[in-house]
Length: 105
Image (cartoon, rainbow, N blue to C red):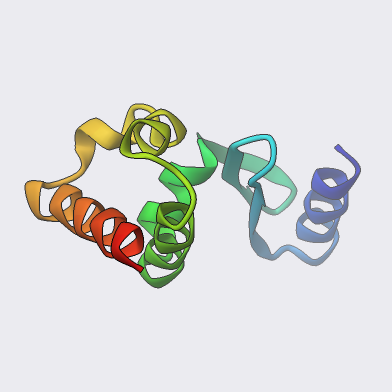
C-alpha cells in the first residue's frame, strides 16, 4: 500500500500518468496499477507465471528451462496452473523437449 500511495501521490501532484508494475514470484502474484492525475484507472492482477508469460517471453522460457532441470512434467503443470491450458501445442511440446533434454544430460 505504501508503494501504491507514492505513485498515486506523484500522479496527483504532478498531473502525470503512472503505470506501476509489480511481481512476487515466491507468492505467485503480479499486476499493474494505472493512475491518471491521482486517480486509479485500473488494476490488472495475474499469477506470476501469467504475468511473465504475457510480458516477457524470453524470461518465461528461461524460467521454464531452469524448472525443467529439476521438476517433472506434473510439477510444471501444477506450477503453471490455469496457464497450462492456455499454452499452444507447440509450447507444450517445447516444455516436453526441455524435460527430455535435461533427463538425457
